Image 1 (cartoon, rainbow, N blue to C red):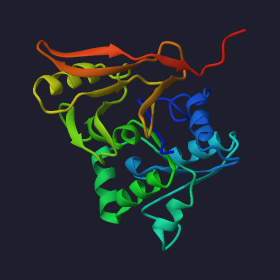
Image 2 (image 1 turned 120 degrees about the vertical axis):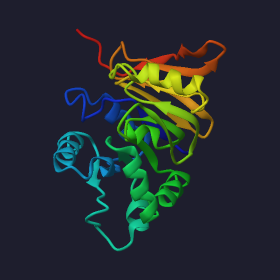
Image 3 (image 1 turned 45 degrees about the vertical axis):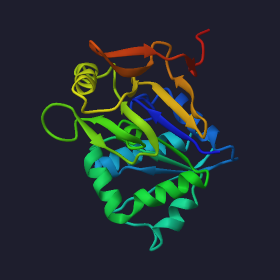
Length: 235
């Protein structure tokens, strides 16, 4: 079974007191103490980002590690990646991240990992990268459509409720025909895809939502998708 879990935002880097989405990713491996590797490429391998990953994932039942393309842990990049049970891609500059991945051939390795059953996950840049296109602010100026890896069809827009220009920009890009229809994810919302397509939406808080977004005669329209809340109920 192949898995991709795309988060609009949230997880350890945005909700350090609520690791519900991170715990969900670990669980999807089906392994006892799975090997979870963080890819902080989009942030330029920011040390603080890596530190927060380890601080969070050492609390979970897994073996955390990270991959730096600036300080490679091994001469055999493919064997290192394929040895993992889950790959978790962080946020940052999507365009720069994808360019660096392609230079190192990591895009092809990630596709192989996915076909081998390694769980692929991430937020923001680490969410849109799996789709054909994503809404990005990687280039200065208005939000634009970015060609991505194409493991999943259509487009993705993260931070839908977290950045004021995200929703109108996605609608504009759709209306102008610059981007394909797709899915929009609030901070705290994640779309879980399997071989059969969209399996379910999970959220770390009750008010987080995911939307199916498409082009209409009026420009663009959206439909709220049913979700499962992972947050523990208050006592």
